[in-house]
Image (cartoon, rainbow over all chains, first blue to last red; front, side):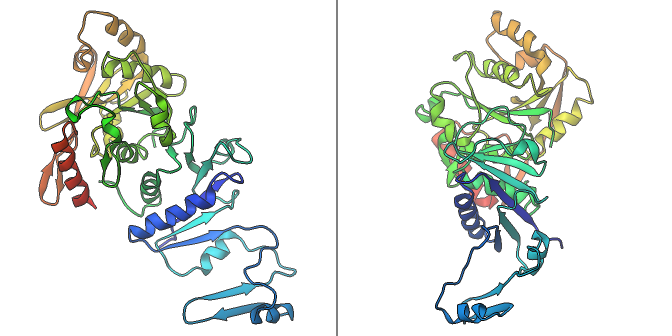
Length: 171
Length: 205
């Protein structure tokens, strides 16, 4: 079975993370196993100086796995290699019902575009990205070819994702 | 997705039997009736709009354009305003009633197929031998005729307009929800029907 992937894209401060967070909660409450992928800035770090794992890495380890009975994480240092593709990352995830991808504006999976009046930029992305299949906005949007949803209308957006990705069929 | 068909949610009713206010903003299944309707319509048409009068701010959270019309002239005035809105970008509008949360998921597809490519033909939904004139696929080219019709001495009956034009009726089967037969065009007019709808939503999950 191919993986079901759905993206959340938009300009900075357009509400991507809040929408992703609320969709994870909604879809999880509906009984789906949800995983996420987040594209971050260049030098993000989930570790911090002083931890044992940080010292392993700082000493030159290529990969550091940190493991407990509650969760585990694998940190992989990119030195001369390129950033892995989204597909390569998706292939590393455990089986689940759907993967929500935040960011990754240019990848070819289906996405919803978030728009808030307070966003850093309000130029629509949908005109130049045929993979944007819907808009979530905090204001009425006219002249848009795609379905538009209220950014707080989480149930509607979750329904749309369920039908668009084939998680669920409408009867 | 039919990109030349725009969806119009008719939400202009005065909800007299519900004690007034916006019927479509009443809660149903943990959200609003209107939210349920948008979910059904979104996979069927691309662009959508809400036909409603009064302060559009109360509907702004749905992200959709709100189209006002000549209040008091019934759904036909909303359909006329919807045709005006859609005309630059779509060949047809699909109308659905905002108080009818269980309409068929293949409404657009079946209505579109039934007009057999006739550009001027209206396709209207039926169930259980009854016509549902607010659930129809309308060519926007009928705009001018509708304008004239609304100016005449008619009682603004949607059915009267449909039946004075080339039209086709399309029958939709009953729904079977937890061994209860439900008309897919079941609409909510009274508090009792809202309770009934709540039970149907719960059974559908």
